[in-house]
Image 1: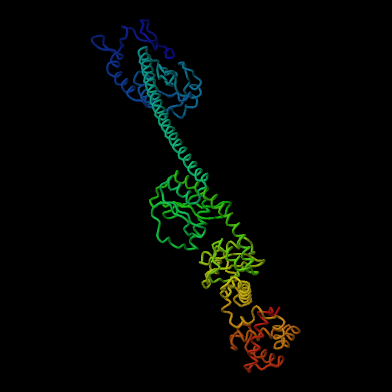
Image 2: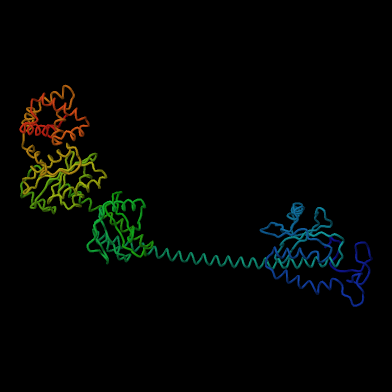
Length: 590
């Protein structure tokens, strides 16, 4: 401790200022020589064991440094100005460093490399930085000042405190490193266990995926169809498996718990479910089912689902469901191509039936398609606004007809689709189903009278067209019209010559038509609306959006121009038929 002009051992030398006074070695001058103990021995016997225990009992390095700094003043005229701990190669000051001189001391201490050196502490004298060098290396520094020159004994006590502090720090550092090593070892072991668990899971997952691929590949290689795929999925997952068509009707079920009967789907709710699953892009849980869409090239062909009321399905189950849906999409797409080929052959048959063909050929060919021409047939014509009569729309009409219980042969023309259907269509069910399928009610359907033999189909086709035309030209142009319900219009149907009809209209309405053409009036339309409203003035005026006085004026002009009496029963009948023919058959004002 040369900075305080002392040595580690006592030596007899002449008394000088700041040195030891004369006397025996180790004896303090103020203490009697008889039976008294020097302060060093007193401190060693009473305080050092407690100090040593306090330093070595704690494992916190900051606490050790704090204790050492608190005991500095007990060993002599010293003052602990600052303490530093070595943290990651840098000297970090203790919180007890005074704010006034901390920067000046910091710059000095941080440049030291383990030596004891004098330091300048503002406002203090005799400052020195004492290295806390222990078995584990340099642990920090104590910065100590002395208010007076210390004795050799005080130097020795300070050096002892420094060595004890350094040793306690070595023990604490070793213990901390041991604890960190133990924690790191525990972390590594835990990480190894996690990796082993992941590896085991990966091996299990890889094995399961291989089993799924092999099972579905075996089904494909053996030419197994839809039932084989659902059976394989049931075997892989243990859950009941079902397939529904595009409209929610059951196609197949594998496993226990099949409802009997299977519930009829709600079209609107089913469509909403399909959109919900499509938005998610993968299997989706809805109620007690895990559902995947069968959707090759974006078009939904059906639904593959697992029945899982307890929500037991895991990632392996989802993987198997996804791959089974892919395999089923390939299978249903293949069936779809076959169906399209069959559809083309069906169209050829329908085209021949509409144009007229021999009955023997018609019966044989329809039987090949599973259609029974021996039953009563109806011809149905479908036209939808803003929908071209292409293959896609023909398929939509065919599916809708099947959905409402109308087994049909389907073909298409330039602007409409034609069905040759078994049995009588049910009211407006086909129209309502197509409105839901297309998303718009802007469609018109015409239905012929019954047909008992194939050779009557061409005539029934004309009836269906007539019913379609009547509906299109009516005030409620969208919906279904049955030829049997046309009434008066039936006598204006196929077989009547348009020249005769035009002559009839000319006879009764010619002057009015000419007058309307010259003066851009609407007398013929007014007369037609008057008959449609049953001769009711108020209803007729309201439908024409004119005043009742205007209507009376127009009717008077009609009597004057046409020369016919509207109160005559015969004139009224002929005029009414003429206006109907003019409006329906001859295109009305156009």
